[in-house]
Image (cartoon, rainbow, N blue to C red; front, side, top):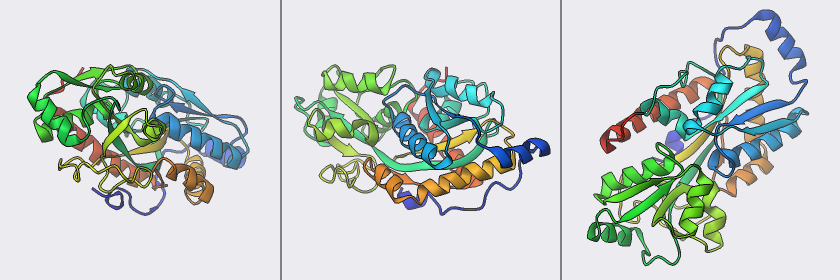
Length: 327
């Protein structure tokens, strides 16, 4: 699926939210008058963290207040997400959500509804593919080699990820479904840990988002076999797509979005959505995103809700097909 199919033009703002009139009026006049916390529900070094650092730096400049990236990892993003779901709806505690937000509903019982339990403000990043990689000392030079080796040695190859239900895990399971390769999953506690493992040769293969892996691939510390986008990445133009490598049906790109606690006043939502539009139109901001093969976007709340629901349905099917048991 192409980026165009994923991301529609900027649409209308959220039509109706529960608003406390005095709070809304005050928020419109004074927000922000103190630092804003953006909760990133994962450890430093992953895709969400890369996006969060870029966004918080530029947003701080634009609104004249510090926007602090607050990493709160744990339970596949649930710990950080619940902090925001339970926070005051005053605009000073926000959530940067990504892949796990749409996968977790199929994997475990959540203490919040992934959509109704938040104020959905905007998608803020889209487009980065995952990169399938091996250690440069590996005899595996291509996806074709990986499949052949896995079939010759069933159950003897392994792949690492940053945890059960993460993008790297589910791409690995989707790869197994599409190719019939028998490769064993090894779950680590973070993106950084799985990257350390593949660089050290502890696992045979890892797939992770472009912003996480680009420095290691460009420096030669890892060998890229394929990207999961529909077209080649401009930052790794010599790396084939999965389809070009001979594997159909693996076209996955990432996203990040901005959510707040439920029942945020409409003026706050409008203000924050406006700031996301401002970022998306900023050439310098777009250039920083482009360095990681990401696109700046600023969808409306309803548009982002529809996107998340499609993703929830898609990955629920993959999880069922792969036989991954809910926890």
